[in-house]
Length: 255
Image 1 (spheres, rainbow, N blue to C red):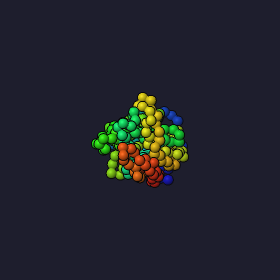
Image 2: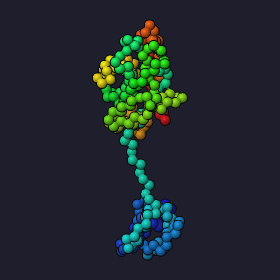
Image 3: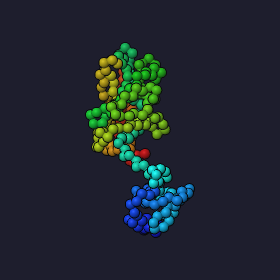
Image 4: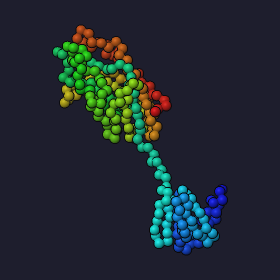
């Protein structure tokens, strides 16, 4: 033990109980005496056992006999444990799209991407914008992860950040409540609407799954690689939609 610490311990054990100035240390210890000087680096305290020079960095606050106080070094704040779960989905590869003969186009040609945790939808991304220049003469919707194009609807207590397109893929960042923590089955599904915009009937056409361990304070990242397969639009109809695939795997470590 350092000499100063040894002396302080002895004084703390022997200090009389009469009213006096008080030095409160950052470690919680207290020492009584008369504060005779308060310099910029040290304070001087007179005790029945001699004078002490105490570095201000060791002191939390000074309390004078008349009730005045001076905060010298505020105690370090203890970081609150994280109660949310960070999950990032990184999508790479081919774009999912659909095209229809104008005569057979659905009432609502929107495309929707749903992220499930277990059986519970965590967030949905809906692209209601058409892309007529992609295939002239057809009704086309290519799912584009542009923030200004998507309608984002997170579940209760879920925070969904806007999509972040970049060279490494599109990043979909989510903040999840602690109730969704633990080992979860993550599912991602592209959907078509067999109903109308006011009365939708969403149907899965492409799906991917991955098992994820979600814990507060431990960011998790899932890579989703999309492959077009043989999907094409010929003779005014979509063919081989079922060959479009999304391959999911958990990345480790997470950034």
